[in-house]
Image (tube, rainbow, N blue to C red; front, side, top):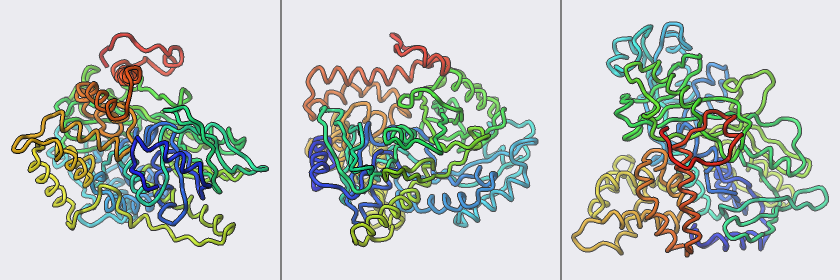
Length: 571
C-alpha cells in the first residue's frame, strides 16, 4: 500500500486486500499478529492483517508492561524458555529503545519465603548467564542493611537481604502499534475494526474469509493462500468457526493491575515480592504513579470485557500492605486499574500460576494455522516460527523463494537513533528541538517517551500552528498529537486515543477526563462525524470511565448484570 497508515484510508486498504489474493492473511491485531505481519512483509510475502477492534486492544495492552526474562521459569526448570526470552529481551532493547526501558528489580528475601538467600543468589546468577545479561546489568546480592537503605518501605520482619537484577519496562500497546507501523512501511496491508465473520472454503480447504468493516458496515471477501489465527484469547472461537476446535484448548486466566499516585506508594524502584498466599507480584514506579500486579485466576466470563472486581482490588491491596506495612493503601488510593486475559494452553492437573507460558502451533484439516499461548517477550520468535512454516508451504506450492527471518535486525518505528550511538543523546536532541518550537519540556518529554523519534512528525504539525515567538497553547499541542494519531496511526475513536495511543486512562486519568471533549471535537472535525456519532463517542468514553470508577463485587456480579451504574462511585 502506498497510502498513509491513516484512519481515512481504511476503505482503500480493505478494497486493495479484496482485489487480489494475498499470500498470507493474519487474523488478530495484537503483538503476535503484528510480529507475523512484520516478518512476512520483510520476506516478500504479500500479507494482510485484520483486527476486529483496535490494534493491541486485548491482551497486548493489558499486561504487566514488562519485557522480562522470566525468573519464575527458571524455578520451574524451563531453561530453554529463560534462554529464549533473555535473547529476545536484548533484541527488543536494541531495536525499540524508545519503548523498552531498563528497570532494575529488587527481589527481597525473607525467612520462609519463595526464594532463600542462597537459592536467590545462585538462581539469579544462572538466570543472568542463561539470558546473556551484560556485565554491567548482572545481579548483585545485598545484605539486610543494604536492602533497607535502598528500599526502606519494605517489611523488616524476617528480611534476610535481597537480589538486585535487571528487567525492562515497556508500553505494550505502543509496542504493538509501532511494530504494525514498521510492517506497514514494509508493505503489509493492515486495518482495524474489521471483523472476520466466516471462512470461505474451496473443497475442504479454507481459502478466504468474509469480513465486515465495523465502522461503515460494508462487507468484503478476502482470499489468501494461507490463513493464520493469531487472536490470543479468541483463538478457540476462531477454531470453532473453522470446525477444528479439538485436542488442546486454551485456559484463560485473568491478571489485574492497580494504579496509585506515587506519593501513596513511594517505592524507590521496581520490586518482585511474595504475597501472603505464596504467589509473587510486582510493584513498578512509572513517572508520577506506581502500579502493582498481578492476579492469576481462572476466567470464564465475557472474553471481550474482562473487568477488575472489588475482590481483585482488595487482594492486591492486602498483598502490597503486607510487604510495605507503613504504606497502608486504601480503596480510595486506587486511581486506575486494568484487567487482561492470558491465553494459556490447558494442562491437566495444573493451577493457573503453574501453566506453561510456552506457545504452540496447531494446523487444522482446512489448513488454518493457529498460534496459541506465549508471552509478550517472545512474540518475535513466535512470529518467526509461523512465517517459517508459511514460507516453506508457499515455496513448495509456487516455487518462489523467500528470505530468512531478519526481524532481529529491524529497528522498530520510533526507535531510530538519528545518528547517535547512545539513545539518551537522541532523546536530548529531540527534547531541545521541542523546546525550540515552543513545546513545554514536560510535554516534549512525554511525547519522546511515547513516540520516540516519531515525535518529529508531531513537531512538524505544530509548525503550521505556531505564532512566532510564542509558546504553543494546550489546544495546539493536543491537535498536533491527535492529528498524528489519526493520520499516521489509524486512530478511529476517542477511546482508542485516550487508552491505547497515550495510556492516559491508565496513568493520567484526570488528564484523560479533561481532554476527552476536545479529543471528540477535533476527531469529529477531521473524520467528518455528525452529532449522533459524536454522542456515540461521548457515550463510549463515559462507559470506559465508568468501568474504572465502578467495580463489581466479583465475577458473579458481572454475569448477573449488564447495566452500567448511573453514578460514579469511589474505587
